Amino acid sequence: MFHSKTRIGLRLKAVLFILGILVALTAYAFIYAFPTQNRYIIDNFKERNLRHLETLSIAIVEPLLNKQYAALYDMLEEQLMNNADWRAINLTTIEDQIIYPLDSNIKPLGSKELLIERDVLFLDEKLARLSLVVDYGSYQSHSQQQQSQLVWTLLGVIVFALIVAYILVNKLVIWPLHRPVSYTHLRAHETRHD
Image 1 (cartoon, rainbow, N blue to C red):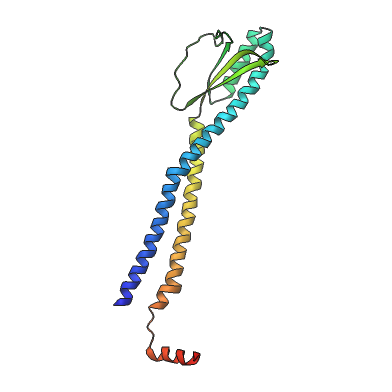
Image 2: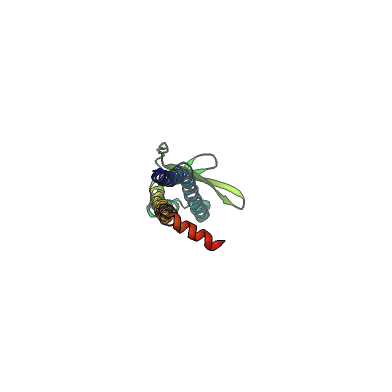
């Protein structure tokens, strides 16, 4: 009777230990890892678009200085068409006069949109200001899907390892403790060691 209660107790403790580890890992993933990765994704997306905007600000210096607005408009329109995440580009003078676009309907930012701004400089003199509205929603959902697959795969591997450890502990520790052992067999074993 004592052995069956002990075995159930040990197994229950092992199962509770495994469940505790799984709950802790899942809580860690959802409370810390996912939000941290989400901030990293947005920061990475913003940094990538800022570098792109810096390159664009250098490219538009010549048409801006020469007042070649048709070439400037074509360049900005092409950038909007080639970048699926870009929603709007605004180019203003240092006096805040709008150069691009001609229709200046300024829409409020959406929930998954960022405003990135960059000065257009020539010989350290500010010529204009580029403002870019980007939508990070699709980039974020794609990255989060990859992260989720990775986390769930890792949790699956950990669960598998814990189940294997549980089975090994049962087979190597718990089950041998419950084998019937006769008193004569124990006494013979003790006399051999004496």
